[in-house]
Every structure is written in structure tokens, then in C-alpha cells.
Length: 365
Image 1: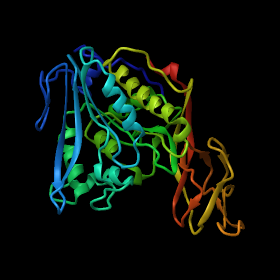
Image 2: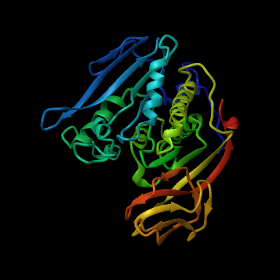
Image 3: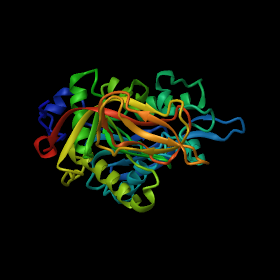
């Protein structure tokens, strides 16, 4: 697929203005409920969705960074799954250092979307055990806490945004490194711009399709006509040695998208010279196996259906108790469980079908 990248600016005659995918005229004062920021100012507050039985607020902490100059509004969120904090850490560094007098447009930043899940270091909302990123179809101001939080996201955070980055990462036992854009169906212009965002984000693997169970905030944004991506970046025990590099990559990648939109000056910096685009559709789980999992392949390896993906050993005797086989032909992608203890049915990784390999320099401005 050949794309022409345009700088997403404020020229009323630009292709992006004509397509109405980005709003280039903004109010001088940006307000979300009682959180308001004048041009060149930053504001912080909470969007309350509900209360617990002990009347503790259930809310989303939100920052508005309103530039001194007109431009698009970018929404960047992190930690909708509470332990997935790497993207939010990179976003926080941008918030600390961004020069609002030079910023064109506005950044809506929510580094920790799901505060209860963050407090307990878990994936699911602490108040109801639900997956907040999968409740958007049932978002309801009178529903569960997760559904109420999703309703606030849809009606008050997503509504003023022109484009969306829904940041995810690995947790303590998984590592991930790729960018998803919703490329299977929908408005071709929105899908094209979402792909542009994914390219600009700059990671070496892009998924244009994923299992249906992975649909979340980014797919809802796309359905509402807003370009969107869902990066999965970092995490796992590797954070001990490479945590600073993970945060730095998240920071640079978010900046890359802001540069693409002409919100800030700079050059887009990509991780590698080439990017691989995959359909990521073949999930691997532990099935009936449990014990100690040891991969028998490397990320990037191509497996044929029936090849051994991993061995499983008895934790007490060290004996081989089972093998996990590739369910289809495919490439082992940059995602999966890295800590050895595994339970029956636990998700492990994904095999992908390579669609194309292109040079970033051929597609980026």
C-alpha cells in the first residue's frame, strides 16, 4: 500500500483540513468539565465517574496542556490496565518538558487511566474485576465502575480529541514491542491516517489486525472518525536493565506523532530503518499445560504449523511434562509472556502473517 505523508498542519487548504479528520480551529480556552486551560497554560484535575460503597471517588486524572498556537488536539492515555505504566511514564516526561509557548494545538494527557488497577498493580479494575478497555460497547453512566469510567472516556475525553494514542505496555511478566492500528474495516481515510500515526510512532513492528478480543479504545475512536493507534511498548523483567530506554522510546514515539501533526518542531526518529506490517491473528495459549514454560524459539522466528513453540517442565522434578505447538504457520511476534511459571489456558504470545516490509524513509515526511 503506497501512502503519501502530509504534515498535519493548520493550513485551511491542506488535504487534512478538507477531509475533516483534524479540527484546526480550537477554542481559546480549553475546558473538560471544571478542568480548564487558557492558551499557553496547563491544568490538572479529576473526572469523577462514580463512588465506591465507602464513597471514595472513582475517577480519571486528566492533564490539559493547551498550546499558545492553534493546532489539533491529541489525546494520549496510559495504564487503562493498571500495571501497564511504561507509556504513561514516557508521557509524563513529555508533560514535564513541553514548552507550551511553542506548542501548536493541545495535548490531553491521562497517564494513569485506571487508578484502582494501578493501586493494586493489576490489569483489571479493582472495584469490579472488569477489563476497562473492553467495556466500551457497554459504557454506561449507570453501569459498573468500569462501564462508568468508559462512559466518561467516550463522552468527555474522546469527544474533543482529533486523534488518539491509547498507550499499553507489558506488565511484570510480559514484554511487548509493537504498534496496532485498526486496519481491517471502516472509513478508508481514517484507516490511512491511523496507519500514518503507526508509522510515525516508529516501532519496528506494526499490527494492522488483531484478534477481535483486542478491540478497545483505539477501535472505538476509529469508529467515531478519529485516527487512532494502540502502541504496546516495554514491560517485563527487562525493565530492571532497560527501563530508561523503554521510557525514552515511549517519549520519543509520542513526540514523533506530535511532529507528524505539526504540533511541535523536530524530526521523526524511528527505532529501525524498516518496519514490518503484520496481521496478528494466531494466538497461542498454554492449553492444558501448566508448570515451567521455556520457549524453544526466538521472537522473529517463522514457525510452521506443528513446530514446537515451548517446552513445559514439572516445577518439582524438572521432568518434561508437555510441549506447546504452533497452531498455524506464522512469525513469532514481539509480544508474550516472559516469566516461566504458567497456568493452564494462560495466554502466551501471537504468531503473525507478514503483510509487507517497507522503509520508514519511503513513507515518512
